[in-house]
Image 1 (cartoon, rainbow, N blue to C red):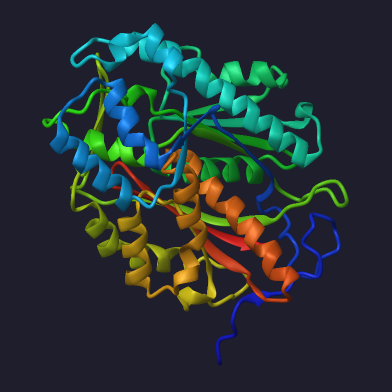
Image 2 (tube, rainbow, N blue to C red):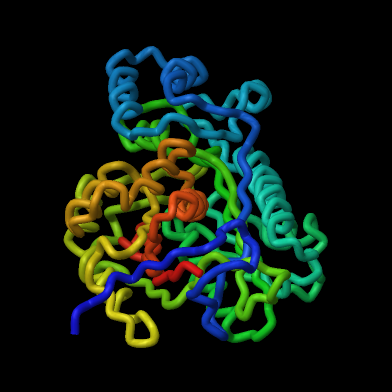
Length: 401
């Protein structure tokens, strides 16, 4: 039997109920609303190098030239950052090599990530159109804070959630944390009929800010690539007609680690903050394993749908960096536009760790609207992918609705 291309045309993608099929699958988790937030400080990439070396009092011209090259290669144009002149004035030791500053860093990071998560959640609630009291569960993801109680409790308090809201905290997962959050929230929603799950992610680079040092070349990669921000989404099954507007169905999720690769992405907390090491073979490891992982996800499509052609799908890939996106694109034979939403998120925000997958999804939602307005078909099925420490692959089979 000849395979048919899995595409569909929406008659109206304004968020109203006037749509053609496909319709939500009963009992399957859907994304009902999204929101995002960023710190006030905007960091244009062209001004990063001068500012970074000035703030850290570094005079090493060779390292400065290296950072300039890295900044060009990342394709990043704009980022947002919690770090500011005021913070450096109050905590000058952050820019001093070898200073034990973990306490000071958490004094800055802990409230900052909750503030961003609160703003993103409120934006999400506004789009959702339902009161915070209807949130039954919360999944909070961050690699930027450590404390007891955790940021999940502070966020629930700030948002005025019910005191019996079911909270889950996912700490220090790194770049795949957003897709892990989707998997956990999906399981909660599908196993608790009528529930509404708030998933929030919030990250800041404060923990890793330090002066450049030739003994730590990985710090320059972080300085050139990573940014700060937050995201929030509401997930639930069986959307309420005329009251909720789902736009993505979460069909199947899997996680997989690559044995023997736990040192490729290495991070540890020290008295000076968090130290990261990224192996040069990371893109190659992803390239060697990505196709088998994607095929496993594609085989889980429901109702006998046969997904075989990668270019018949949409792709929401965490943009860990341009090298990773290039390897995924080349290995799978994707046409250039398939990863455009990922590349645009990287360009506009940098790699914001667990948040970035949601910026990609938002770009996809906007692109879908534009395609519909032009009378073009849009792919029904797609994959959401992220990679991080482990090396861990996290994936989810998604369906536009």
